[in-house]
Every structure is written in C-alpha cells, then in structure tokens.
Length: 355
Image (cartoon, rainbow, N blue to C red):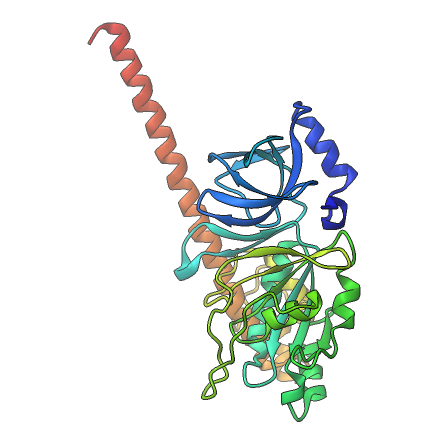
C-alpha cells in the first residue's frame, strides 16, 4: 500500500517522529466500529484497537478516532494498537441527532466534500444550503454534484439554480447510472487527495463511487417510486482507495444534519446576504425589523431573495442554539469535574486524618 497516494506527507511523518518512539508505524483508519477498526499500513490492511481517551499529537485528546484519521500504530501482530492520532488538517462533523450537545465526527482529513443531490425528485435548494454549510465547517473544499441528470428534462436550469445558492462553488451535472459527467470528479481526486460524498439516501453516492472504482464494489438499491427517496444502502463509513490514487469516503445517508455553530461557514454559503449585512447600522443587527437594517432595505428593493434570507436566518438561529447547547454542556462538564476533584481531595484528607 502506497500511503503517499492516500495523503501521507512529510508533515505527517514529522508529527509521527514527535511521539518519540521509532518503532511506531503510520496508518490511516479505513473503518471505525465500537472500539475496533481497520487501518491501511505500508504492508496491508490491519485490524486495530484503541483505548479512550486517545492522545493526539499537538492537540487535546479525543474519545475516539474517525474514518480518515492518520495514526501511529504498534508495528507487529495481527491486531495493532493505535497509540496516538496525528493532527487533523480538516474535520468533517455534524451536531448529533435530535439536537444533542456534542459534535459527531463523520470523517477526518478530507480535501474535498461532494454535496450530492438527485434530479429525480430529491432536488432541494434549502438542503443544498444546509449541506454546504456543513461542508464549509469542515475546512475542506466543497463542490455540488447534481446526479441523475438523465432523469431531468431541464437539468441545466437546475444547475443554474444550484449555482445561485452556492457562490464560489463548482456545480457539476452527472449521471452515475450512465457514467457521464464524472471526469471532473476523477481529476479532482488526484493521488494524495481524499473526498467524501455527502447527501441523503437514494441520491446515488454508492453508484457514483462504483463508477470511480471501475467495479460494482458497493451495494446499491433503487429508490422508492412514490417519493424518490432511498434506503440506507451504506451502513458504515469507509475509506476506499481509488485505482489511480487518492481515496473516497462513502457515508450513509444522513437523516438529520445538525450544524455546529460556525458562523464563518454560514457567511461563506450566504455571501451575498453577509455582504449586504455589513452595511447595517448596528453590528449585531438581527435583520428582523431593526432600524437601519440594510438586509431589509435590499429585500424591499428586490436585491436579495426572500427565500435566501429566510434560509440564512433559519440556519443562523440553529447555529446559535447549537452554540448555546455546547456552552451549557461544557460548563456542566467542567462543574462535574471540579466537584469530582473536590470530593477526591476530601477523601484523601480524611484518610490522612485517620477518619
């Protein structure tokens, strides 16, 4: 296995040396499942285990690794141990389902995130905006792929609509079933690069990856005829090397896409709204009727789309709620740790005094 084709670099090798154990070998996690997983090494794919919390070079420990993480492994045996993770250059995560407080890391060290939607009935500009915000939060470069263009009578019009809500993002028309429009994806996934496919069930992510692999490796299912929605064909995340170098991560369709609280990512997705908002009289303007609101003026003049502003305000509120939940959770966690330390000190003191 050529780890360089999967993205191993001199910088990562430097961080591996920082651990100070020359016997450790590099690996990249291909699958993570309940304390066990699979990792690519220079020799082959190996089984790995770890003990949480897991050390990270030059970063705080984490509860566990994610698919795509680079790690330091013990060198021998059928079952290797993950000693430490190497620093992540990107982290693709989402808020946990049902508005939970902590983030759920979906994949690590991505270079590209392909937001995939179908043109058979799955097409939704609001969903594209949400997925793009999530992709921007990761630090990876996003692109939009409109799949199943062969089933749409006016695919070019849908592409133009998607471009209008995805400023600065490449929007591609493709048909995974006919293997058309995928050359740009093949070119983008050059050796050393890793991409992930993000989208709801049934949009054709697994079929698209099969075309890039040149074989029917991933299982696929037809969508339901009455609503064009798919079942969760992919049941786990997996890092898959591509024949020409590079890799892709197949992800299950996401039922819920909770955001994390990154307002900079939201500003990138809604850059025309953010640009106008910079002219508001008050820096903390909510764009909900305050005096001197430039966004409201632009809406009245027809310079901004009511749908875009409404989506921006909705996602901003969700981000703010996520940040409040996380802050409250971190505060309670800190209080529990402080109380726990205090109780430990009192036990030690009682032992010293003989009580």
